[in-house]
Picture (tube, helix red, strand yellow):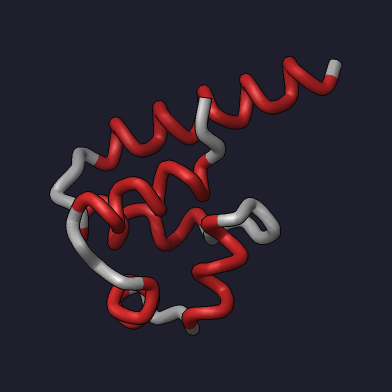
Length: 78
């Protein structure tokens, strides 16, 4: 299972966005987006509605994916 950052990267590449374009739309710098995609930083939950809008996804779908990614990550650690 992907981590949430990998999920974002997959969406970005499927949409043929580079990091600079997506970062600008999320009002982030490219370095911050890179860290999110590699799992070194978490995406601020306040950006989820904008992310849903950019990728034309239902916000509930993103929240469900976020929930299961986090649950899976912690279950592997236990």
